[in-house]
Image (tube, rainbow, N blue to C red):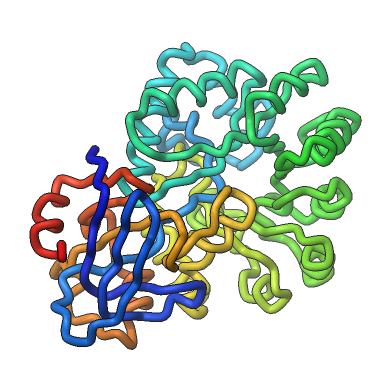
Length: 372
């Protein structure tokens, strides 16, 4: 990891909130984007895009990869296989697995991830420890899960909020208490709903969450209410395919003007690669690829980032620099965003920039080529 006072990168740049394709230079000084300039004659060797935000993970599940096929409730429901494995695995092993997964998250160009961390206060503390030992500039947004009302104060002190399972999986008085406390303390309250069926969606909406995960079985009336109340949606398409619950009605969500975000969900079922998630979403739903890219950058930044996301002057440099690999060569300015969403991969990453930190084994050569 290097700390660079100034970096100048030449190439294609996805500028602003609409990802306008600019051929030119990005200058980063003291961790801030100081200049984005056009230069139609500059040699394109790189593509600069905003870093990713993964809006939903369960990274403790790293200790239980590729379980046998079984009904969803048997896999992740209360007392299911996942929770049995987590309860039987020493915390030191879970912490090591989470640390390695955080490194993997960073290797895919992700700088923030929102993790639903089970296990009460101890679960939150283990993720804090794993993050501090990872050695990469990734910020976990920790959404703890209290085991009882006695856990609530400590979890809100330590974590960014709470992330609950379906309303059907918790005592009603506990989940209502947690939701109310989150509002009072201006913390995130998030919940799963609409994954197995539609029965839990209205009850979840009654809790006024910051965002809801899955919504596979949601309807237009649910989306209308979410839009009216400013509730975001997080979809996990690869996870839904693996568990066989169906696909979220993404086009209807977008037509309802929801703030839709992308998550990779349980590490036991999927890796944490946002590039792969984007490709699935784009090819399955055939929507505007700019919308897909926003779902894992600008959209989740609205509630998971403390700073404005995207490539504009005076914003913090949270950037992925893609090399012009054989995989990405011959993309034109016209189809650049489509190519990034549908075919870019972690192997195409030249470097990841997070403020003053620039991490890459290729960075030395990149600086030689592009410094002005």
